[in-house]
Length: 84
Image (cartoon, rainbow, N blue to C red; front, top):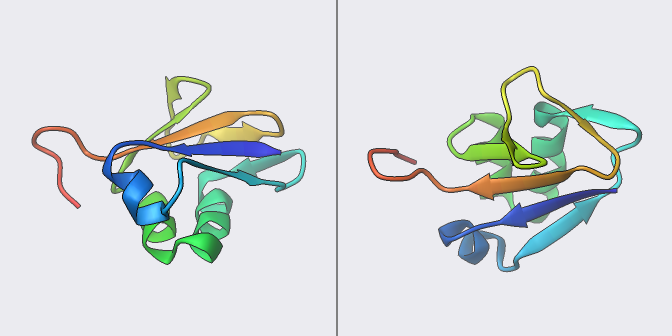
């Protein structure tokens, strides 16, 4: 199970503080974005298009980051100077 936590304005978009997804032993940011899109299409698109900051276990995630069962993923809106 992967825990996805939504921060700041993303909580309002998601309508909740966190979600849990069972995506098997390991997955990619693309697949996570697809799972998030099922509950929040806007956030799913933001994950897939990398329009938000994503961290896995408190480390900034890159395009090649593999997410494992038990990991915690944080979705953070752009900070000063960022854009949607």
